[in-house]
Image 1 (tube, rainbow, N blue to C red):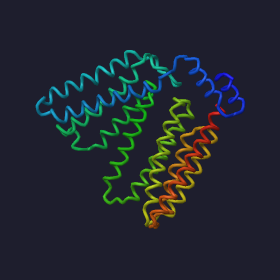
Image 2: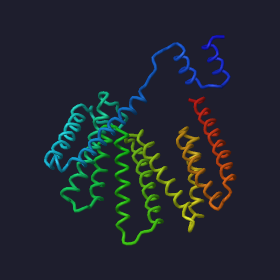
Image 3: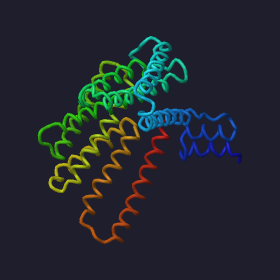
Image 4: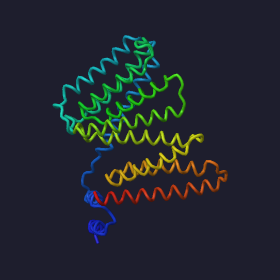
Length: 314
């Protein structure tokens, strides 16, 4: 039996999905293999590396270069990046849009990161807003939201949501008296706000495909807040119950909508929280090691099986 025939047999038996069968068959036939995902990752990583190097150069040599040179270089990169994106962009649409060419998304991401560097440099050197970083973050979040929706870029949308989270955090830190529980409540408020905003925008058919980004960020912030509540031995009972309910909701959502990431969130965050509750008073190292080996292996096997079932139905 040839390899192609065996792959067809495995597909009919349900051992592999139709997508896997097509992928392996193309490899056997030596057909061209798409590296789109890997190349996108490398290009975005390259942009991050360039901006990181730019930031290091400025922090190290700014005194020798002078403020005029530093701001001129940053402004030039920023202006050129945004000019290129706006000059190449197609007409705006509320639905999903394809980039006009291969590099617009990366140039937009570069310009967004350079904006952050220039704002930080201006405040550090000239104290334009007298250290009111919350205003910088809020303005940056608004700008990034506008850019994300104008150019249909999820990476910039993630930057906008991250800036908004920073604004929430700085605002809470300025309260006269704050405790860890206050930060957890702020995280819950942020998570709720992001989730509701994403749902409302989806309801109005405005970049419907962005809803997953909103939901992923809201879910992760929610789970982290719940976990830190579980770690707080003074009041972890309510937080543990909340974590379990959040895991159950994430699992149901992931299975119903066939979004594997939410199944992983439920498994990983729930596993960490439950393990902490079970082992926080344990002293036997052999028992702890055995527990993690057995339970972690079982969880990985379960996730693999669920992923395979997802693959069979796609």
